[in-house]
Image (cartoon, rainbow, N blue to C red; front, side, top):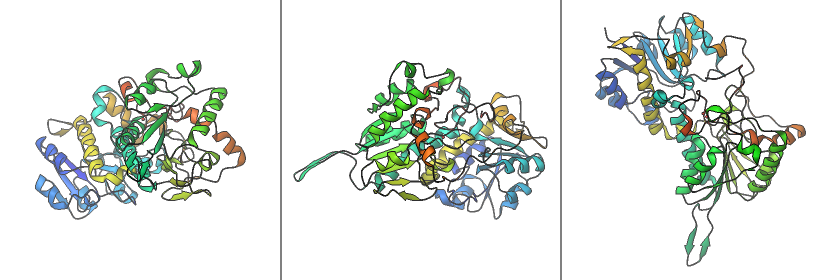
Length: 436
């Protein structure tokens, strides 16, 4: 009997992506695998049920029907309680689990006897590049951040010379130069903006300049030695942080659009832009916070809303930016999953080799237990806390934060680095995640 893959409709509010597309359904069929897609799963990505059926998938009316004979379940987000309860023992579940913030999901999968894999923990090694879902989605998020910022900004992006006079080019400042940051730089440049960027890793300077942007950082001796093994950043001294914060504060005043991209796996996102810095910008300026789902890089950011400072600076807190380009995001994520499923199946049969370095790194639950070392202890406080009002003391501390931001390995450092969310600073050993 053929291995059956079930693809469910996403139930998290605002999630428009889907875990497979007609393209990947055909590829699964070529491997001898059967695909069952829950009706309506592709609606948010403009893929009707008829297209899945034409590609060779069976369309199930309900999630329960899709899961009934499933050997492998593919999702964008981790399964909810009802979906988990419908899994048969031994089912393999693959998704972007958001494991640090969804510890109950891990416990439920273990209790059900399911084998759970987190796509965000796929290691960043050469043979796993095609499975790198974090990078594929961060790339789109960086692009969309610029589009969102340009749409909110009340002026043109490129310089325009007209008979009535010249329109000045917009100034865009990208804080954090990982996958999302690099795409934001490239997109803003294509739109004609004057772009600057900052990061504490010296290796990123060349990448920024290769895209036609200007690198902005305190380039002293400490900066030159700031990059550790694997492309990650060392934590900078308080003296350096103070110098960098002063430079950023002065620079931010002159910017029209600021895009922040720093994430730390399992922890609240670091503050890169304080309330004072935001208030120093011109009325009508825009800040796009790509880390808003993890608490935000910007003081005053509000998840799912546009916050407005007293002097008229907009702070965009839109979550799930890849989901705003759902068709492309689903295509890329579907290909990431297809490559991963190739490790789970051999000769048309389910053959999960837990000694494979990729599968071992991504494995969360197996044999009725939570097995990933980062989650076998007591659960810490959730990383995805809503941004709270900051005290005067925290606002002062925030001024030093930019020096710690954007510790994601540059794309050129994929061979030896462990998997991190995009623009993520290496976490301490507990929790230690396996580059948003």
